[in-house]
Amino acid sequence: MLPTEMVGKMVGKKRTLPTLQKFIIYEIMQFLPDNGEKQAYLNEISKRLSVGAKFILVDLEGDQCSDNFNLLMSAWKAHQYGTREDTEQVKVDFEHINRDLHFVPSMRIEALLNNAGFTEVQKFYKAYLFGGYIATKQ
Image (tube, rainbow, N blue to C red; front, top):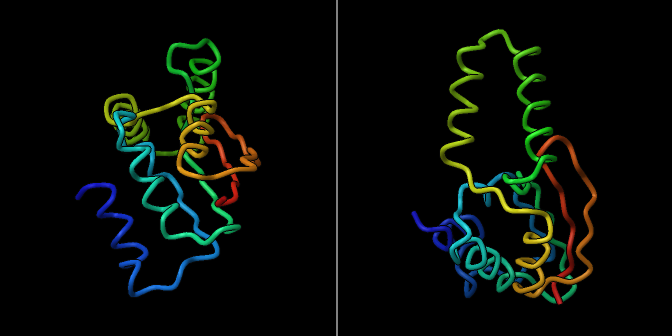
């Protein structure tokens, strides 16, 4: 299923739903490559929001080439290995993260949101490589 189809399934067809006043997505964009799919996904959400609507995005983020990214990834792994009993599953999970997820730096997330018609983008959450943003539809 394409990202734009996922949005359609989540919020319905625009002609059958009123415009929305708020929308939250949690850990979805990390599965979309930054080849236009992330932007298309946010654009589809933006189309379904009324002016002034609040949008919350929580997802993995980071510049995979940076020292900070590597430090936070190591800390997250150490936390997972230290708190989960099934260490083999932790290994599998991090192989999946490294192979299949598409991280982008926080500046890119803010640009994607702005390009989709959101303003007043504010970061309200940060834990390891997770970031949370709230924005307003213009």
